Every structure is written in C-alpha cells, then in structure tokens.
Image (cartoon, helix red, strand yellow):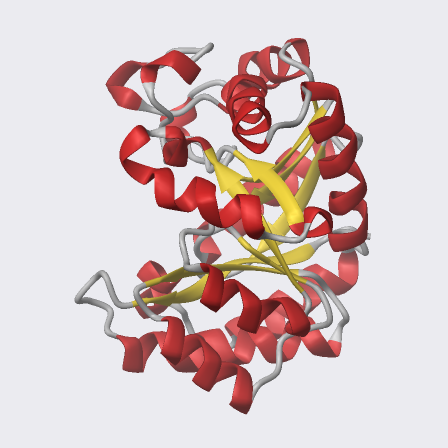
Length: 258
C-alpha cells in the first residue's frame, strides 16, 4: 500500500472525485495529502477530507504562484482551519523564481507568515521551491520552519539536501523525474538518508513518462492512481523491492505527518 504525500485532488481538471478515489484505492493507494494552492481551494479540500476522512489528509496554504490572490485576514482564516482539524497541515507553500509574476518580493511575506503559523501550531509544512534555494534559506533565517517539513517534488542538488536535512526536511519523489533526462534527480535520491524519502504524484501535474502511466487521462493530466507505477519505478532505481519501498515510505510518512 502506498501513501501519496502530495496531490491536488480538489483540482477540477481531475473531474469526478468518486471515480478517481476508487481508482486510487484499487491501485493500492491507502491515503493521500490533498494540498490547496489558494484560498478558493480551502473549502473544496475541507469537503473532500470530511467526505473521506480515512483516506484524505487536508493541507491548507497559498502557493507562491497564487501569492497575489491572498486577501485581507487570510492568516487568521488559515489558523482557524488548522485549529478545527488536528490532522490538517500547511501546504502547498513556498518560493519560486522560475516564474516572473508574482515576483519573489510578493511571495516572501506570504511564505513567511505561513511558516510562522505552521510553527506556532506545530503542523507539518509542504514546501515548493523552484530556482529559489538561497531565498528559501534566507526565509528560514527570518522564520525557522517547523520541526518537520516536506520538500515536495524535490529537484534540488545533494548539497541543497544536506543543508535542509538538519532542519527537519523530508523529500518526496514525483514520477516526472523518471524521465531519463532527469537522471541527476535519481542520483540525488540515491544519496538521501533512507528515512527521509517519500513518494507523491502531484496530480494532476508532473506527469510521468509513458511507461509509468497506468491510469491515462486526457490532456496529459496525471492521475493519482499512477502512484503504484511511479513508486515501482523509483524502487527499481534505488535497488529496493516494491515491498521494501512501500514499508519505508509508510514509516517515513508517519513521522513526517504524525
């Protein structure tokens, strides 16, 4: 059984949720963390978690691409959501200098506030970071992360990982990195501590190569039911059996998302 440590099941691009969840269960997915990306998602994530409490763990946050959409008072509304559900975590949040707008100066205060909220309430935080590593470490100097956090779809270097590990980071692998052109990322995961590795789909994004698509969707959308094929591909590349990786990532998930 697998745990999808990061997806966006609330995304309308995935269509009807009942069929998607049934397919995930049939594919061996035991649980998943559903991450909001903006305030408008928060209610949808809550409803999914309420309808499937044994399957969905909710995560609430504002993605760096959506930093401009934050409205007055969002911080207290986020705190209230987290206080209302002890399972809830903070995500997806982060910093991104691959995009031009909203720029890092708009992203930063939104990110810092969410780090503070996560630390105050002792909640795991899921972080997106793309071409903004030094900005991330600068942010951590201003607002240290909580004691455990997930670097989702981690594409950084071994050197970056070694700076993050003492701070409490775990690292999730998404199927996009099974592309042979992304072999450097596989090499990084081979060098990570085994107790820090998780798996994810980031569905409906980060579509894996065709050999690892067990559940095709239109318009190159990534079905979260692809997790078994993705994890099997990672296990092979790490020299582990599927069963070994399943046990390992289950144990790691329970530590990262207690």
